[in-house]
Length: 143
Image 1 (cartoon, one colour):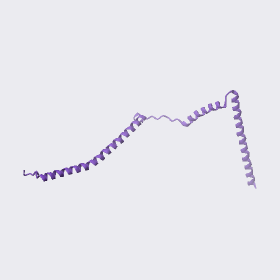
Image 2 (image 1 turned 60 degrees about the vertical axis):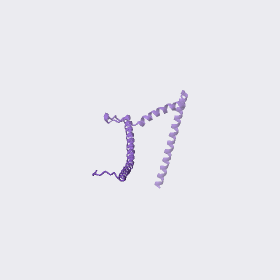
Image 3 (image 1 turned 90 degrees about the vertical axis):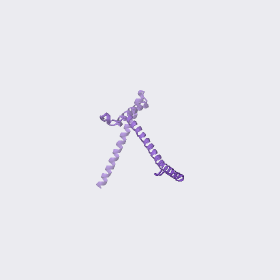
Image 4 (image 1 turned 45 degrees about the horizontal axis):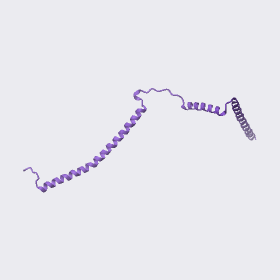
């Protein structure tokens, strides 16, 4: 029976704490409303005060987002990489790629030309031999 009584007490205690928290929240909201009304009476509209505070909040948020400031690190001039150098390197890289494509295309054309040239030479030599044989004017070492 002691366990059930303790559970009831703890349930009652929990409910009582919740009620106290609700009352605190309500009191806090009422205090804020009273402050807004006081400001309106002074001549400031709630919109103006809200915009002023939001501007400040936005500014302070951006500072927090930046995080902790780090110490600058010295980098030797020859080790530095600037934006202009990066752009130059990108241009060089593109030019190298274009040059490689041109070289590959030239090699391909050359490899296609070689068999044609070989066949042409073979045909030409065959025709020369056949003409010489037909004419009977083959040069010999005896003449």
